[in-house]
Length: 54
Length: 265
Image (cartoon, rainbow over all chains, first blue to last red; front, side, top):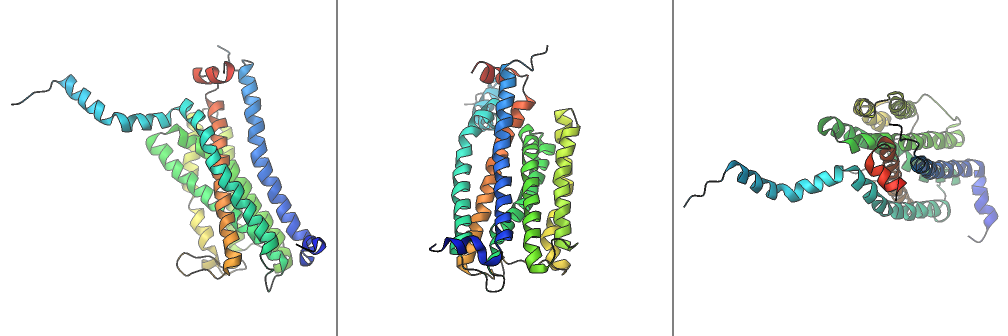
């Protein structure tokens, strides 16, 4: 890639190509991050004894 | 000389014979075993997912030449086709798990469906959105009620239906069975999506890749696409496996093994 400007320009389709790849990156990131957060929160609640009610 | 075995002795013999196989099967169905082992299995899905997707994206954006008709906008293909493939693969896997859940009452199969549905829904959404973005410059419209697009939208609603059903039933067992049933019934949509471009020639193009007829695509363009599909499939496996661990922990949050591992571990 000698010419970065032409790479980002994507032959005039920059907005289409980069928005598609950007949304894909967002979807994948959310799929990875959200379960990890939820897992952590759940473990914290278990440690706090939130589910011992009997 | 005959040795007559008593009833108890026969039982002992059959037990020792089946022991290896049975133990392995029971171990796999056991929640604590699955929770611990799946953390180790995840790496075997995560590593190929990252490698394949990185190769597909870099090759698709940099090394593959622009399409001779569409120019650079065709690079959306490397996201669009793998996510569309995954949307079909994910629902089919859920239907298979649904059969396992209903016939063998395997709890992990119910948990698989619950964990796979949000992943499948998000990649169906991605297939629809990238298709719309691609459609504007090439078809002149973001959306049209074409057979392929419409049936893929119905697939998104089926995924969302499984998620909603799972959340709306309080009893995990009943929720698992209801979702298994919806997964099995809904899988009828998968062949409809696949053959939609053959049965109704509306706007979406036909299949580029084929197992029988060969592929109408240059090898330089094809390999990154196959890598993308494989990478997305591994990603789906990884995310679903992780989701299953979380679901299992939530479902058995009051059990002794969870207390032992989380609270005292």
